[in-house]
Image (tube, one colour):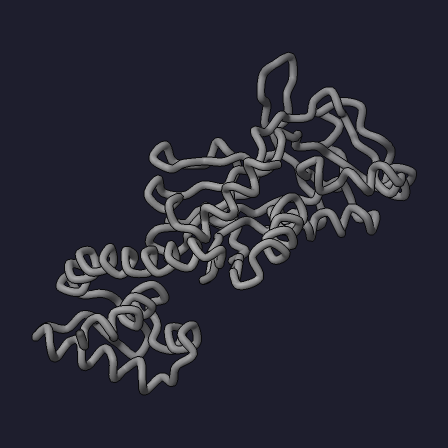
Length: 294
């Protein structure tokens, strides 16, 4: 029973690889987290974590223990959540990992609707533009483009398909001219992207005679965030490459102009994804049902 009481603490330390971060998540003092880990290690007779002044990592014994113990903890949580859901109370914390663009494109409206329907449910969104293992990271679900989701995950559509487009402000185009061909982009001040995971500079992708072509661009600014690129384009700095829904309202009011529309690249849209077993949890089921209801 002592191990069961301390298991959520051990899981949080393993997830964050940090005693301080685990304490912050659980609302405990750092000493309480350290005590819980020491008690568990003493009862198991083996260290669960290898600690240095700079890092915390699971030992082989810790990995084996959590691999067997966490499913049992999840089962207890799900049983309690199902009992509350049967009384019409969806509760708990629904953790989602999503790129920043998912907020304005889909999640903001969804979270507002969930808050109205299930006030006891807390939706926690981690904005992260890198690809992560949502299971290892302790997330209930993730959001990504359809083409980026692993085959063993269940995917539910969040947005319709959209296009990746080039845009610029009228002020920039008046100053620098309007590109008429893809080749013209190389002569313009383009707001570039550095890919966080690979570290490479992203070549903008377009369609040309039904083929996907990559265009190397250059300019005075380079970012890792599409929303920052949007702001720079609105300020007249240069040409930005964005998903069309992010720029739509600005195009409609004339603050941005869609460039080379016949070359825009179709994208599959954003999807919510999760392990097949996870969809039985009432907190995730509430979100899935909302999506399917439209």
